[in-house]
Amino acid sequence: MIKFEHGRFIFNAGILKIIACEGRGPETGAVSVRFTVLGSGSAGNCSLLETPSARILIDAGFSGRQIRSRLEKIRSSHEGIDAVLVTHEHSDHTRGLNVIGGKWQVPVFANRMTREAIESGLKAEVSWKQFSSGDSFFIGDVEVESFCLPHDAHDPVGFLLKTPGGTIGILTDLGHSNPLVLQKARESDVLLLETNYDNEMLKADVKRPWQTKQRIMSRHGHLSNDQAAELLGEIGCERLKHLFLGHLSRDCNTTELAVATVEGRLSGMGMSHIPVECLCQETPGSTVTLEILQSPQQTEGGQLVLF
Image (cartoon, rainbow, N blue to C red; front, side, top):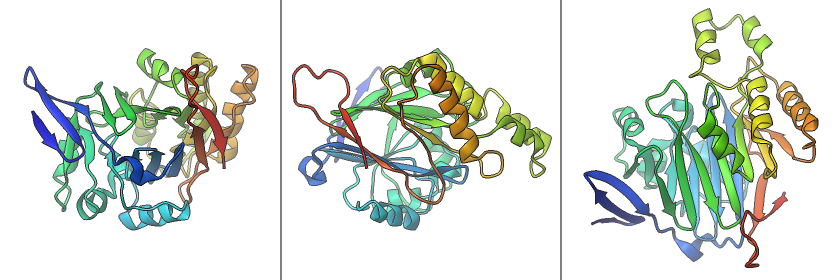
């Protein structure tokens, strides 16, 4: 058995598996589960999850200084972060790893191909915690489920973050949905969903060559507003309590178009009560709080409070 500060590894038939990652418990001071997207767009993505025994960043697509500043804006701190989960190697998800993994000494969780794609470009030494796509593992009281996504990266993944208050889905950077993606989205109480572009705005864009537009619209590119709305229609949204729209293109989408497309679909499903929040690149979004209910009858999710 191989031990490390934040958890345990075991070997199984030559494959390194993470079976548990022990968070720092009472140091978080949290009595509920809080989730905040610090910023999301084509130039940077980063989110923070805080539970009673873990503080986790999902991606690190801004500079270390920017991430620290955004944490302070939501009255949080860069100190005491237990882990950063990396979805894939593109710079809008990894820009801050030199500072976070190096200077702040936060363990970086990534699969092998993502790690290899990132590692050669890092100046700092980073404590890597490697998983295989499809693995589940614990960081404190959070069960992290990784799953494969169709995107033009080495081995991109999404995450389901199962907490004492409910389940948060991270679903950006994918060119289309499939049965696995739909299954994971269906399990989410809070969902961060990509709405990267509007079809007509992308086609009319003069900055991008046709080859780039083809890549964006391909089955390994990004989700459009219409594709995101279609995904929501397929999952039914019976469990969903809050929906974040993320990874919007600055040139080929607008907040109004993304929200109108998605809210139109939700309304047609009889789900217009679900709050829809469109995220931006410049400032953090709202903090969603999932209250931890102690009742033994509570088996799925918690009570959501939005500040």
